[in-house]
Length: 363
Image (tube, rainbow, N blue to C red):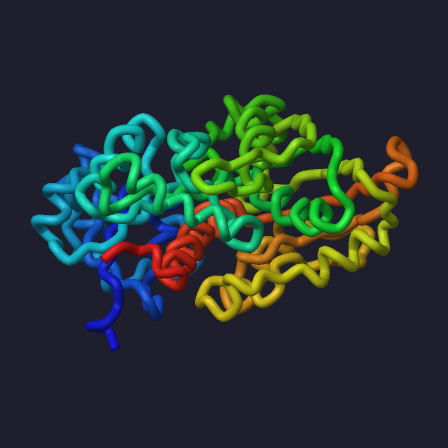
């Protein structure tokens, strides 16, 4: 019933990822949106009058007339005292202060900002990759004296590579990874990249993106030991590029393994990859990794909404073949992940569903 759903708020609600949160949480079976927060210039205004709704489909009628609140736990909890969780699409500099304030106020924060991702006691989660890391939340609360907490979603570019590395790492070990990203313009938020910069062009630099990809992948595939995550030991080198595609981050991957691997082996373990921790959750894809056999797939325009029951939550892989630089110990392939769904809002919603299933949402 509606009354039994968990009340939640969305921070940074007027931006592209905030809109994705609204789209995914509208009519969600577990959560219901009771508050929206935004920047000072939008505070007090009607959501429909301020938001730039650039997504497919109509803005849900239920949020159109909601009044935007200040990004402050006292304000949000005064307006909606039953809020149990917030989904944060805040810019980094605001998230640095606001997210801990909400956690200290007893609210569980599911963050898309990068500020807290590499903090040792903050879980950085892709549920199919490292669901057990969510238990770090207990140590975070004990250390900081919080009843709430912060759980981070990974960088949007990392979601495809990390998902595919998990089964390869488990089956064959990983020594080194070389990858090149082709990142959609929606990854820069709204209004994003100026048209004169991106039209008929490729931008071979995205600030801090290569460092995030290299560091976050090792934390995600690391091993949780009590209150410590021992990062995975493989090397990873990334080149990150912005390309004139609206949605969908593609990453080409060359992976050197510790044990011999064939392309057929790699396809098999990725195709069979499942995670029992998320099975049946509303946003979890039935098939986390979808393999395309065609020589010219995946393609962002045709494949970015792959996934069931929620389109865009599966990672699509194609062109799996031997990597000649690594001989019998390497494969190369292409990954595609929808950056604002699997790589942002959808990933955080799935993190929240997992937290509730694991009994980590607090009292």
